[in-house]
Image (cartoon, rainbow, N blue to C red; front, top):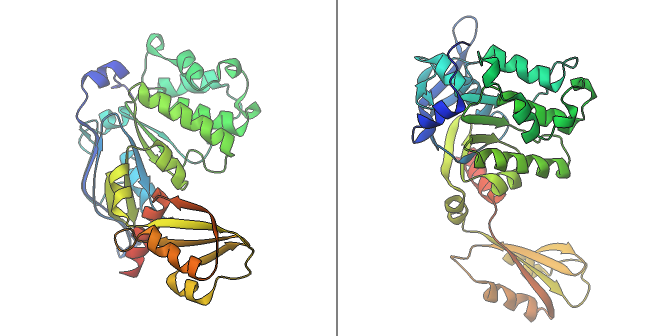
Length: 326
């Protein structure tokens, strides 16, 4: 690709929004021209420059279709999509220069070294040798010591990090991470979170898809939830959490129980273990002190009380289940 711009050039030309999607639609057709699946239904999203934006949704919700349209791998049926101000149809080369994609699959040439892989990727995007950031990127992702070894000798975690460096080889201001921590252990997951934050601090806008909802809650500034091709939520993380009128109350009692008393079960209490019971309630309709009266009436002494605030998982489940019911 001969029309690559430097990271500094792209940042200097920075628009307010890194990605803009307006009424984007994608319908798949059979060979006979009959519609078989409407993967995206007039999806509109705005991803502000400099943020970490989470895109959540069940399997088959349309996340991969949206990403593939942005990456130029799938043609949209309707609507518009712009990356760093460049329309993916009208200015495809400039749009692709502004984006790097880290797919779920570890598609690396096993017989190339990390340095060779990054140099080759930069060359494919037309980055001159003197402007390549190979050593800098290897240092950023912690692979300087492995720069000359074959990729097949790298651990799974190292390959994940190399994939991120590969996506950054042409210095895009926007990075898409598609399930970057799928199948990795918690230690590596947190290590990758640290890299993502560092990239964002350096000025990279990040679009993250993940099935780990705690990951979205930990990293993202804004979150959109897509379900069956439709955006069902799109707001700041804090605003989304405030929308769900739900809290969990758990009590530790002073003697063992085998089951929750019938009158408490009717109120919504559930068994946790021999000494704990829990209930999910709506703070707008009741308060914790009112809920605690019934356990005390049943003769339970309260040794300890725990409350849990709404999580991104609660938001996700409530919104996607609501869509399935409607």
